[in-house]
Length: 211
Length: 211
DNA sequence: TCTCAACTGTACCCATGGTGCAGTCTCCCC
DNA sequence: GGGGAGACTGCACCATGGGTACAGTTGAGA
Image (cartoon, rainbow over all chains, first blue to last red; front, side, top):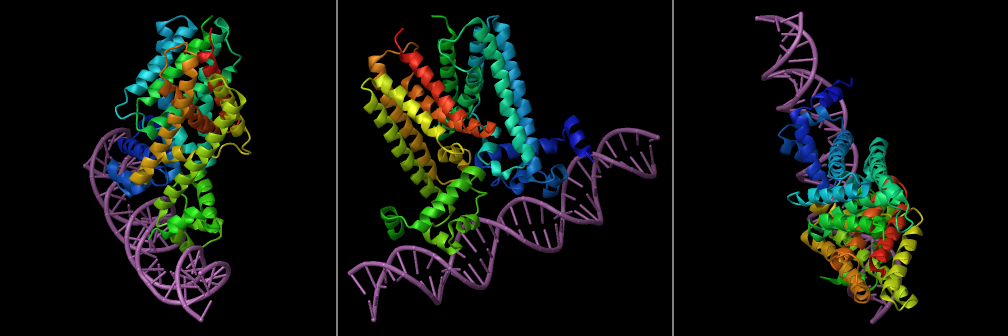
């Protein structure tokens, strides 16, 4: 009976995509529970029945939303680091360039970053089933793995000035993004996020640049 | 008719305090909307009527919760920086000591930091009225002011190695805490938060220590 | 003894998540 | 051009939860 899911993956129906879009925006601004099926179907111009045709319940919606979010996120990060390495053969320079591109990306979002799905789920974890929580955890571990790979390349050529665990440094990128998103929302200043990424860049530059 | 509020502030009733305690824990783990009045009154061992006696509605509860959270937070930060300055006359050393104390504080919380009320509100901002949102914004600006004061003291004696805006550096502390909380929750590793604070400390040390 | 803060109990309204199922429309394949 | 299937619509129904309204109870202090 996986027909709906598998077909949806192969060629996602426009209605389903619209529902995910509306749901994402609503969930990031008022939370999962407060986002009603009614407003999702109204915004996506389908009916309640249409919603339950595509998703068994709200939890399935959350799962689909997170999966799509993580995939998109991976594509963006792939692109950023690919371009970084295209622009410099030096691993440190590539990292610094990638971080700058990352900051620019955030700066280019019209009304600021709308919020991270992973963070939303963490702050409402009791609402979700084990599968969603596992997916969420794996997303963060994926970030760690990716950033750690970059940092290991850097550390091989440039021994860091201060004894710092590379995994922790990898997490520091995710931390700056997650914290930056929260602080940008809290202060009402969307540019806070890219500025925090550039500060992190400044730290990596200081840490790995030979004296 | 401000009798309830003013008396509650002077000598908060134990039932009210219990409700705030239960509500905070619930809200930080499942969000504001999903936290039912039913579970709050059950956990605090009062009745539904008791809830509505102390709070006009859920929004008033949020306001009371945030106020209490910010006051407690201020007390903790006052203490951390007071101890930092007691232990060293040098502003940089005092800051580094304070950050270490801050990290230790986070490390000492049994099941990790339960979550920041300010972040919860940001990620569900559409649920709250203008007053709560203003209070939330002011809390973050208060952090900025406090940390900026410390950093100005440091920068007067130790010119930073890299041109960095002191306000952004001040926000970096809040960013590390907020991001660290999210990442600690997401990875399931409570110790991630204190480790990120220590990484931030390492940055400040590098940035301000004369060559 | 009186008063008042701090509750309790009951009844009621509306919105929302979720179930169940029959009907419709449109495209594609035979 | 007939039929099946995917992608929906429409409707009826239930339980839960926020919120309103209001009358009654209890215990400590003046």
